[in-house]
Image (cartoon, rainbow, N blue to C red; front, side, top):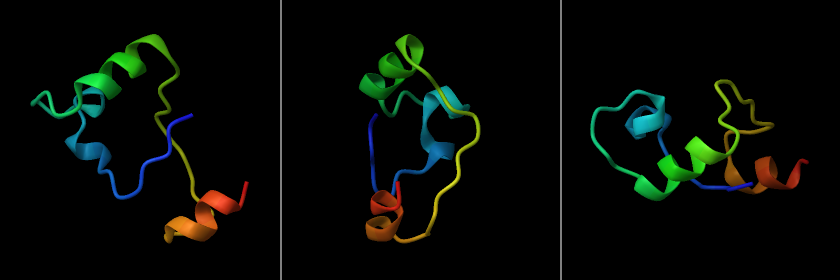
Length: 52
């Protein structure tokens, strides 16, 4: 699991962005599990990451 704070999915190539902005994450997405939908317990990082 990779936890990243303030990363926009619409700026990642594996979610449709045309530029190669995250080659390491793109490689990880090709070889791992890529979630099309995900939910968060909070919009704030601390309680969201601690909630589960």
